[in-house]
Image: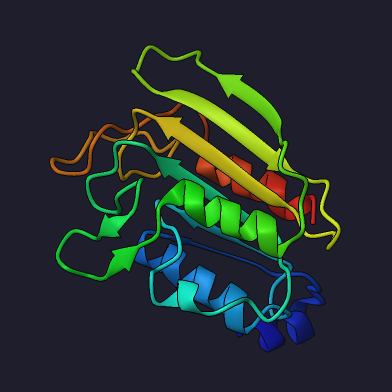
Length: 178
């Protein structure tokens, strides 16, 4: 599909992102096919314990958006709901990518708390990386397993949703910066 789009529409750069299981798939692609896309993003996902036994073939730009109260993919790591494997904690995942991309440990930090929805947003940008591949992480304190910015009723068992930031806009902003 990528080659077809490149040929028919002269598109040169592609960015891969995924939600939940799709985010885990994006991580797998980042590890084993690093030159396929200019960057990779996962929403409510991290690195699986099995994938963490490997090392990425080369540094790649990565972006994560995760809620701290996710009842499906545990923020601090552990068994994914439904016995779908073990996930590394989100902050441990970010630390791994900071190490692999040879980034400085101190990020640029932005905080957003404009909505009255019980969610506070922390945006961590690690752009000072020897590899020239950045790491971005949006921590949604109090949010669950939803797509940030999507206006819909909360789904039972998914935790709190937020419109404090838009995943669509944040992913697009990150992709354009690569």
